[in-house]
Length: 300
Image 1 (cartoon, rainbow, N blue to C red):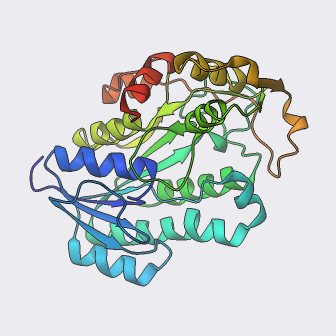
Image 2 (cartoon, rainbow, N blue to C red):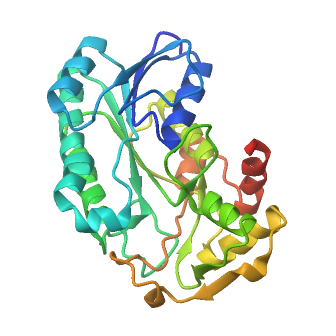
């Protein structure tokens, strides 16, 4: 795939840093877009641009100058409670920025790969397939669904990868994730309250990045579900993290969702059917326990 130009938005994030490393290693011409100082440890063989995805004119101008074959949009406002409180900011990043990317892709005939979420579903069932009915229960999910529809209604080539509860290890990050939060809390001997009535299939960031590479190598069109292959409640997830790192499980207190008083409603059960990604992309699924061992090997 040499000489294929690719723009990665949100390159300072957890997934973004994994994407930079993976696509540079696979000899793509990589152009990384993110806000502020470049957080990636890799410094060679790609270009970094300090740009806010909501600065539509600057983003459009840069993209037209680079003329990429592909754009992977990993930039998003993902704090669910913050999205519930700040609709305008959420829409600017999760909807309007995507609308801008779609327009530019149309003008330069680029393929857009967009990262979406399980939160477009209401969580009243599990084993969701790509064509199941959507019904978000919070504003974050609604914003991501709006962006999906913008892409689907366009005439561009696109891939949408929906994923669940992404975690992973990178050198420089400003955000935590489910695994780091549980691990760090238990190491500090802090008690944590963890819900037993929300079910997820956590996704290692390395696996999501690999799915992006597979989708681009195969020039896959459409929607694909990417996650681990085992449905667990959040309490079970926390217990597995404690076991993997030999930490005190007694510090993990099981509670119900209503006891948390979260700003935004969460869908109770959002497991994916990942057969399409396995068969069409060659995505390799694994259990959370198996992927935790990879996470552990990367922790310094």
